[in-house]
Image (cartoon, rainbow, N blue to C red; front, side, top):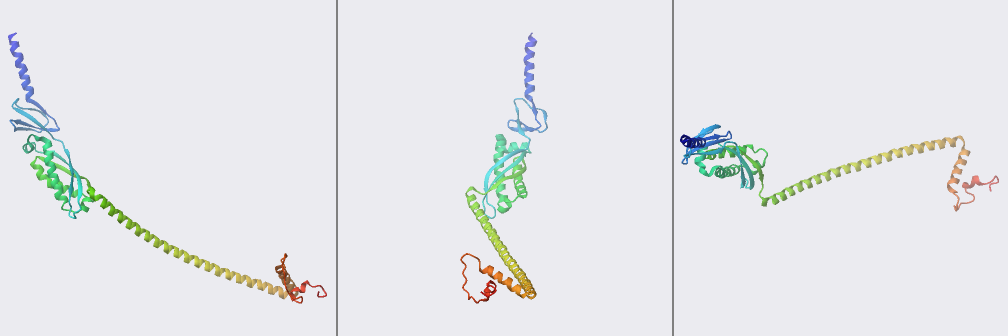
Length: 289
């Protein structure tokens, strides 16, 4: 009974001491073993690891690639056209010992604040050395690579590795947007006016060409009509001449009937002629009355 009384607490204490000396390193993290604030061991491989209970402590850091959004900042390119740039960076903790020495107990939050300052300075330096057209162009990969390379050295002093830097958005400051839009609108209106003027000029040329074509076609049609009319008159006169030559008296009688038909239309038609006029020759009787 007395042995059990002594052995059981010893076993419990041994189990507690063993459990407090064992820790597990996840594959997504790295761990530092600290003794009185000093780094004693680095655990980068996943699995079981050991420490001295009560004396040593374990600090864990994420080993994955992390993202950090940089607050929008204003930059002034070479052409003095201010821009607001919104960017983000991807990074990872490459050297946990240096990282601990650089940020202390502040951890990843303190490191991100310092990384922000590094990236903002690199962004201003790189984008300030080019024109705004280069920044606003679709091919900005070279600029983003320059920003990353400019920040690598400072980030390595924090134990960080910058994997990538990207520009998410590049805009004009709010106070400049309206002036820029007005200038763009005026430019588009000028281009529209030029297009309208060119269209009107082309329309005038088409109308003039159409009017000339109409005049030419009408003139040609009138000419052909006059020719056809002249030929018809000539043919008619020829027929009349042939008929007159075949029977002169009948021809004169026929022409007189036509004259009577056109002159005496009925109604209140009145003709004032001498009774001896040849016009009435075929209206007289055999005695000439």
